[in-house]
Amino acid sequence: MGIAIAKLEAWMRDYYHKVDHDIGSSGVRDLSVAEFRALCGFDLSELDSLVLRDSEAYGGPGLRAALADRWTGGDVDPVMVTHGSSEAIYIVMHTLLEAGDEVIVVDPAYQQLYDIARSKGCRITPWRLRADRGFSPDMELLRKLAASGPRMIVVNFPHNPTGVSITADEQDELISIAAESGAWLVWDNAFGEMTYTAAPLRLPHDRYDKVISFGTLSKSYGLAGMRVGWCLAPRELHERMAVLRDYIALYVSPVLEFFAEKAVRNADRIVALQREHAAANLKILQDWAAGLPDLVRLTPPDGSVTAFVEFPRLPDVERSCRRLAEEHRVLLVPGMCFGDDFRSYARLGFGGTTAELTAGLSALEQVLREDSRTVADR
Image (tube, rainbow, N blue to C red):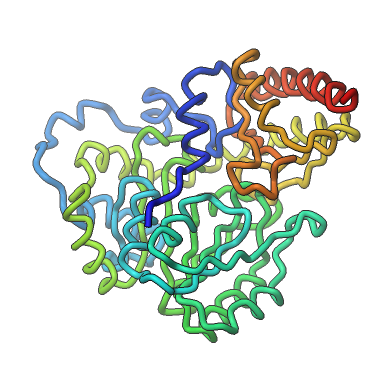
């Protein structure tokens, strides 16, 4: 089967590098090399002794050790370094899934979390987060869906694009549901460290043996340009994944791993800085939405740096998003990138600079007023 066009990535390919203000992306403010060095306390001269040889299939020992210290109690066996979490998602799906397998996926979702599986002939069962419930996850619904014995359950909390999350008790229930069904639990932890209403959730690995989690430097760290992520999974699965990876990328560059190790060793400092900045921007977004009750409906996110905003007067916001990009040089991601049921929504990212957020919201308000009048006049 052919794989579907990744709508979000196609949108970004069209507009991401052609705008001045980004209020559509899902990451925090990008760090410069100077800011990154200051936060981590190192000098570029440390690169002088780096030998540019191949790295290892599962990742260089320094970076794997840093990730293990942060996530697995120092055990490096479950740690695999990848080119962002995107490579990890792709390899995991191709390694574990076969045609006919059922995969339950939170809905809406990042397209790679389900369409890779669909391209392999898997049956995709959406676990819908309903807008009329504030996108709050329905654990009883998940239990009913999982009674069929799916091969895999795929979730990401805090969630992309809504920013909603679950409680620690709900996480325990989710793990229990996966265990009772015998499904692999895929825990996309891309936004796990960026929370506002509660402490970050623990990774599920200590409570169930069929857990795979993904992480990345792109979302909570402001280091998207490194393209470094990781996959935590049983060693036996990594050995199978390495067979496919031998045909794709082999390993991550040791230069990238050098910087990534610095980031992971200083993660608390970096994430705290980014969280403080994002929380202040979230307040700006909430105040802006509160002033436009007829045009904007916002469910405040529990974490991440995105909100899934509804524009009730616009049945399809794609045209408005294109106008924003082409006429005002502002990036906003239309809801159709997350499924046709969400055409009146847009993913609004508030992790960038405060200046671009305020400029972007001003332009968005102008377009909303203009396009709402156009729709009303039809």
